[in-house]
Picture (tube, rainbow, N blue to C red):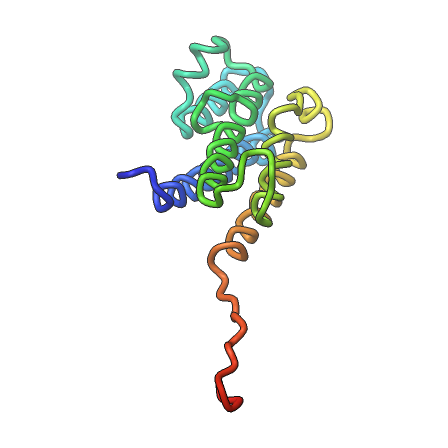
Length: 175
């Protein structure tokens, strides 16, 4: 497929969907299963391995980090710049496609969706994983999901909402 506007719309949607689903998969493991498992046990390692496998990241994670450690998994799935299913990677790809669609240079914002996407992308580039864990992973992921939902609403307003245009006045006052 040619990498034209249609391709960028597809990529934009795919990347935002991947980021959202990665955040939900990670949130389910961390928030719902953590109270019922013993942290650091082989049972826990199986759960974390399953999370990585569910996003096709087990092999890539093992190559990069080796041992299964929850902190490294969170960092890998949220902040990694190279793993195609990490939230940071996906938001970056979505931002690139959004700017390709609008023609607005990266770093500037001409549309609501760009004004929402830019800060999220920047946040993912500078937030340390330790701070996220200390302040609560569930709360951070919930905040990311709300920001991605706002971006989605912005995209709808920017590109898919019908706007009434001023009707030209014809001679004699008829429209």
